[in-house]
Length: 253
Figure (cartoon, rainbow, N blue to C red):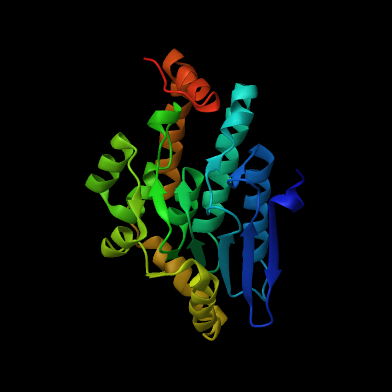
């Protein structure tokens, strides 16, 4: 599948850009896909006519993260996948314009990374947030989940691998609003259109200013986690976890 087949971008007349992930069946991107997504997000933010970006998806869910089957076939790709994830999340978080994540269905792994890096999250009532990294023999994404839910809730979700529904994410303040799946695109566009009506210079200044008052450096935190991903991938238990996932069986430790 080519990069053009994995996502598509449209810029509307009022400066709202829509970037749609579409890699059936579960929007799990391969290494090239993550690199390409990062480049496209950065490209959109660098266009003077773009005032705000919406990232959404087609299909069963928003994003299932990385393509585990690709990694199972070639574990050496973990370096490229790590770099592609880092570039994508940074392109969202450090973008020159606000980024809205409009999510539905499963939001896993890299999907959490996009949401945690975004400025605003709009969720369908079908959305479920999860970082199953321990069960997949990997690490990463907790820095971005922690930006959404805080330290203690993130640790609980990371250790257990439990799903969190949209309404609970809304209750905790991570999600701005919850709508039906049929209303998701319109809800995201309504927020984006409101931002696009503002002074583009002032919004870009605000984005940079808001970045500077956050606690810690999100990209540095994620880089720290990624070092442990490489450590995990060298273990026999990580290999067993990945094999079990591909073979659709319970892992044996």
